Image 1 (tube, rainbow, N blue to C red):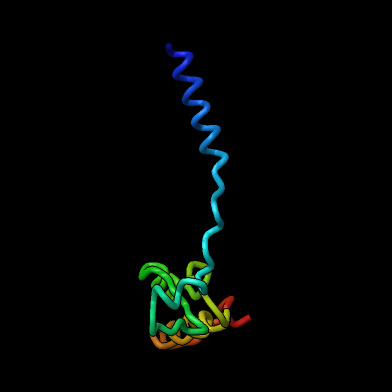
Image 2 (image 1 turned 90 degrees about the horizontal axis):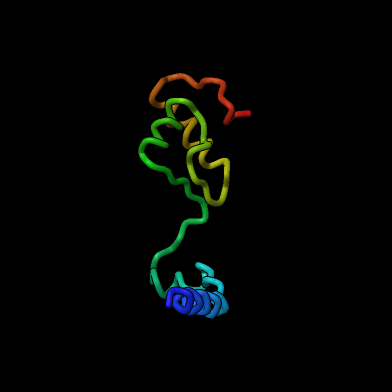
Length: 95
């Protein structure tokens, strides 16, 4: 009986693995219906509060996600760092 159960289980797994799965839709295909009236900005920078704090204290954009212009994150971080600490330090972002 155990052998028959194992064979049935194996046959079911083989049958399920043969199912055709479509590739997921692209965001631009469903975004207008999912978020009507929302305009996604061309340039953006995102990160957790901790990532932003670390990026401002030690000027670096490595932990932030950037979309569009990659220089935007560097300019934001340098501006925040200079506003908070008063001086513009030589940082890897300005190279």
